[in-house]
Length: 75
Image 1 (tube, rainbow, N blue to C red):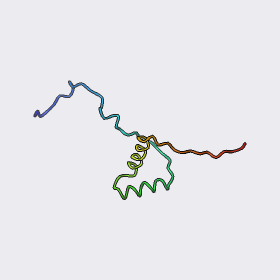
Image 2: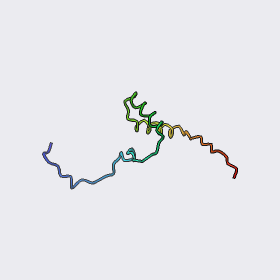
Image 3: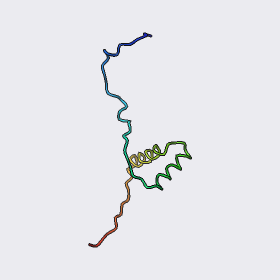
Image 4: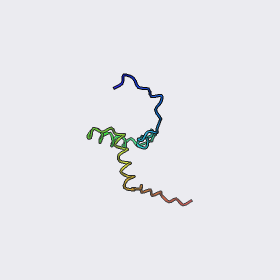
């Protein structure tokens, strides 16, 4: 093994794991939702933000869609 390496002659390449990186976002969540995931986090030992990500990833993988029923108004 060499004591020093010359990296200036190496070719650069893209990070092969870049697609797995997470993007930081700001979400406004109801307090009860945050409390629910924090409770699950305490039980499982997994950070609550990771649990929220896992849940959303599961929704994505199973093509779950939110049921939105807006009340009808007569204007």
